[in-house]
Length: 273
Image (cartoon, rainbow, N blue to C red):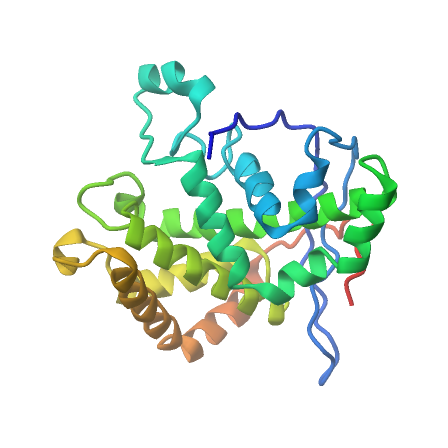
């Protein structure tokens, strides 16, 4: 697939608030946490949000924008000379990043279904790129993009050396990226199910995993391909499950000390729960 240049940012966001927990026994749902301040539609790529592969491409373009989590980590053709001059590391292509996002989306089907309800997709196709339904899909895409960004930012914080070294660690190797992408979908789905989608929750979860599972390449000699990805993914799941009680305690402590800020100024029109 041909790499594409990231689209120019056209949105501004209001702050996020700590989600309100549902009553006991109530079904979990994604809280409407995004408030779009300026909602200029994007008719040039509106159709991408009508299917899962297109959404992965749309989200990938967001993740490589200036200041985004993968900024400087992905080869973007138009930025090639600038990146080389600045000494930036370009471990993967934009097509590879799209594949990473696709893996993550497959691991959180309930989140994707809530952000892109089939009836809204059909309405957006019929209504066109400037319709209210299309805006709903774009808001859903931005919510998922934000959570994917939270996850990978947490990975970067938990594994700072691996994030900047593509040779001494497995993070940027294909099987490592595949495993971490799959694990990311699992973590995002868990956080959404628990209605804990602030970045601090992701930071805490990944810090606990990193304390139990290093990513040094020396520890994975001879590991590669899909079998290697499955092995690393299983190890990540095990490391994640080991810290359950400790994580709950940390989350409770975290909730008491963080200034959660003001609630979003307006509810999202997404049909969440």
